[in-house]
Image (cartoon, rainbow, N blue to C red):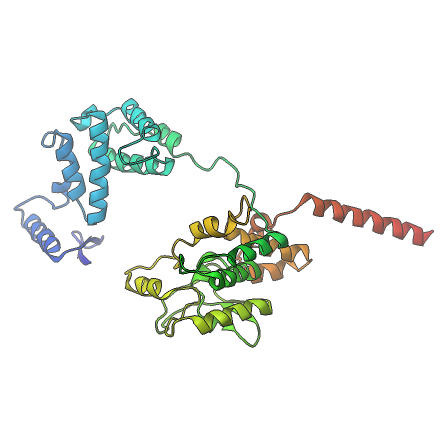
Length: 382
């Protein structure tokens, strides 16, 4: 990235970034001409002029080439705006109306396109609307047809309550482990041992998915039977990573989890510091300029299709193991602040309101115990 910094009045500093050196040098030459009074400001020449760019294609070309856009973004913008032109038959920017955009969004949501079995998803339509809104706000800043009401209809804020989390029972966890034991290792790189270790860590530690994916062998306490969540910085072969919430915590796990991890370590290829990363995925992640937050690839879909559905469990995600962990501890009368420390939550309200699931039978049992204790106290006083 090439950055150009300048200050006209020596008070406010302005910076522009460019991906290639030739574009940055051209911007400097144009700015020097502007300072010498031989031309206009380079930023002014990139603005849309309706008298010069009357057609839709000309306006799109100026929009995608202005500023510093990545090639991938330029391709996506052109395809989305080109799709709008092809479906609506618009010729100029001035022809676009709010009703036209509304009808086009509905057609994208309901019409099956060539090569697709289903119509566009709601998230895809919202992406199209965001690109179209950015373009029209730039081209028609005074009378933009994309109004706040239109965005509110297609991009509503969260009005529905959070779906009730699924709390795994011990029987369901045993069914998941039994299903993992039936995986055909010839068709998947993640075999029975990998899934058993993964499920055991998720169920008994309450780690987030990105914390499990960033777990390295140095974070496993073999003698104390603990797993650690700690930042990874300047470690050989390890990607720099800072966990969410509290940066460091230690969680004890059962001996069976440590045994599964020990078996996984004996089988894993030498030189891979990560617990659940395969060799090809490890090399792929190291080659990425910016690795993803969760290093594991396709683990959510594989858990649903290969583990949960064959176990005949209708709902539940990997993150619900964390909610199950919190609920189990609170049901066993573990102090709330201890649960907060084990989960790495910064706010106590997060532990109680979001991750704790109160069952009706637990509340009934607590009330019955209270009534029985009151009766015993009355009999003792008499």
